Length: 115
Image (cartoon, rainbow, N blue to C red; front, side, top):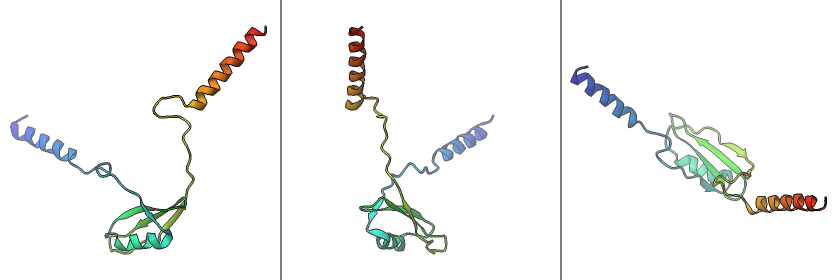
C-alpha cells in the first residue's frame, strides 16, 4: 500500500470517529405545567426537531416534534408508571435483604437446636 492510500485510509478512520453520537450531549427533560406548557415548548422548537417534556407533578410525558417544513405534529401524551428496581446496581445488600437472611439463618439454627 502506498502512502497516499494509507493516508486516505487514516482520514476515513478519523472521519468515522468524528461522527456525532447521540450520547455526546446530555439531554434534560423539561418540566411543564400540562399540555399548555408542552405547547409553549413546541412553539419554540426548531424545524426538524423532536423532544420529550414531562408534567411537573403527574406521571405524564409529552412527545413533541416539528417536521422539516416547520409544521408541528400533534402532541403525543403518555402516562407512565415508575417501577422501582429491586436489585441494587452497586452490588450492596439492602438492610431489608440482610435482615431477611439473618432471620432465615436464625430459624434454621433454632430448628437444628430443637432436634
